[in-house]
Image 1: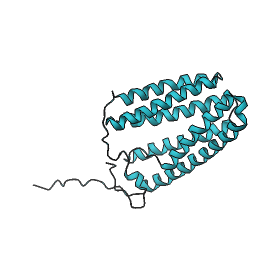
Image 2: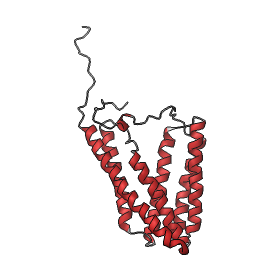
Image 3: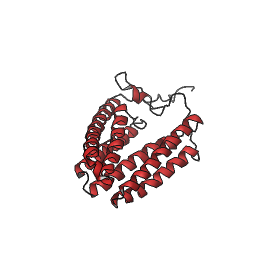
Length: 221
């Protein structure tokens, strides 16, 4: 329970915070999907070191393996009803960390400008602040908006494609414009989704709080 009534003008997504249709979310920690998510998290520093070292082909291989584990943990969680609250946190965290690692590595090497890194990280800092503010008012985590999913998908395509051009320079004539198209579109959608989160959070915070009625000291006397 969010602890507050949801205004009719608020997004339906916010009314469904923490809900997954047709699946029960458990509090288990030791599950196969969670173990796979931990493996993905362990791959992040390896991926970052490879990118910083310019070993893009190996970094892409790590990314492919990570993507396979991502698919497997989702499939196993849904098929064998092992969806957990921890898994709901680990999975997007691993996705974010891989994006950050790629951004840091490519920016450090001058493949992408630092302003792109700042734009993407800045949006996530905004969401973190909004989540903290919402939690102080009794609301749960911000749900993932479909625009945010599309933006993340664009970045997942963009960064490996740009790395592919670094690993195989002969293909750069194709990979560079394609990668930049995904990167710029992803950054734009990232902030569009961020604006939606900001508006919806503002709507929620304007909802009058309903304090639980306290029992009168005179009742029953």
